Length: 164
Length: 243
Image (tube, rainbow over all chains, first blue to last red; front, side):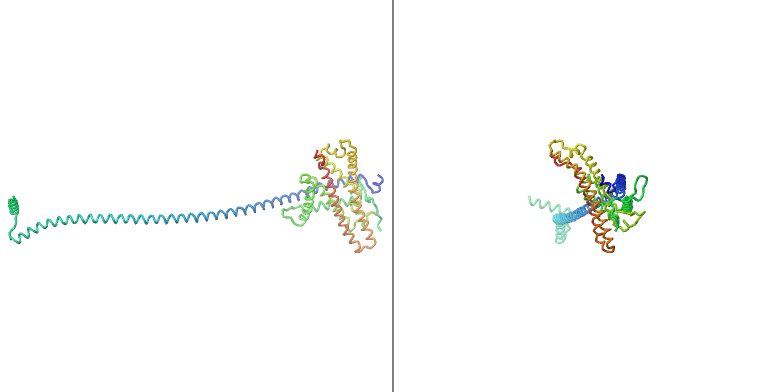
């Protein structure tokens, strides 16, 4: 170990340096490596999270876009349907109205015809009644004789006798 | 010209402990490191700035390197150790380049001296590295698996010889780690003082740049070698797994 002596190696100095190293190791671990590795890890996590969030946001945006498009398409379809239905209903109503109008007209026509018929019958009857009176009146004027009930009965009797 | 001495100069004694100038500087380096990291993480923020950003870069790079080599489970254990090796060595290497080192005298001896130009310091780091490497090997492999590496149960001469070689290589690691660092930094000091004594203006500058690079490279080499040794020894032997 002569060579070590030449270099001035002393066990106590070696030990001192070893102790120095361990003190430094301990303090640096507490002060430097620990906090920095922690913050690096935290940052890495944060970045990862942010990226994931961004991705999610984009996905959500796309979803929303798709949904809104779908909703618009749906709405358009529905409005078209409503429009169609309305048109159909309107057409139906129009047809119904036409039909009932025709019905009413026909009924009115029939009723009118019936009314006319009855009227005519009444008129005929009245005319007949009045005709008898008119004949009697004309007879009175021609003969200048008032036809009474007795005359009428006599005349009828006479005619009946003639007939038999 | 300065006299070149291998031994660190003893400035005084604290009880039994000789206070050498390198020990003093290693305390200074420790204090600098502690203060810098305390300032950087005093109000640690998620959005970093300034010093925190700078240290984050270093720590993240170191952690990634360790993680790539050892996997995330062992990285948590290995990382603080190898990173402390790196930070301590690089700080002390660069600290030794500052003016005043070797020139300020205290009782006839230089007050400050680059830490790693003293074999005490590098040898203690190398021993630490080796001891921790073997400790982790036992911790991760279990004692029996660990011993199998050195003493093969198969009494085949080749395996016995391989085991002996492995043991020798472990001691070589300590020697190579400590002397590589010591030699590089000590040689740098010598070169700088020699060049400065020839012509003190401008001429030493390229050598200072060189020493800045050497200081960083040696720290990185020490860190990487320690890391690789730790990873290799704490990994299950490839042939063991196949059986």
